[in-house]
Image (cartoon, rainbow, N blue to C red):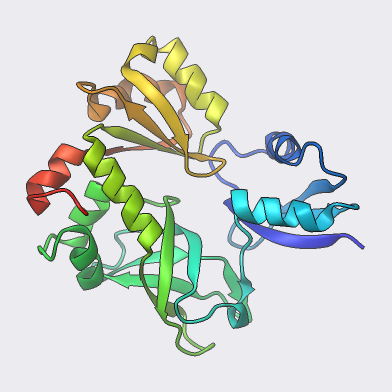
Length: 259
């Protein structure tokens, strides 16, 4: 019997079932398994149907490369490391909310308090949440790895969380590199590659790092400004959201790179 699972990938921006099916088929190439796009959950998470002799292997691959949503509140434990997407940043100046795919028996998101974010991201300094969001590109749909520090009860709408060691390590590496990154949310990799080529800025880009199927970081060469790159690439990706990650600006605020 086929198994239906919810992937930790949202359908938004330039998402299309046809493009998704092509990407997922390429990912599972060589396996005796079929992975079909089935639809979307109420919060736009992608659902797929998996079947075939290598069904178990395909599920492991999907979990490793994309992530499988826990869906049920019971599957989340204290200290669980979860992948998710930022939702509605800036609406609450006291916390940042991350959708981690908990949908049953009710939607339950992970929330990081402003104080916890300040301790982790700015060495205890006290910028307001909108400033932190801008500094670290914590915008809608930004992928984040979080650790649940207090689960609470099933009746609660939020679980208390903090950034995971993996997420802190990623941000730290980005800062230490001193290279600007242009975060692109809601576009396929080939859309970004085309935008870089058509705009004539191939020489300004070192590589494109994939954070998800529709989420990427364009790594700029030393001396290339991500803010200046935005109006060059943006017109070629009108549906995508672009946000600059600027290590030098972060260093000025925290006085030193993160460890």
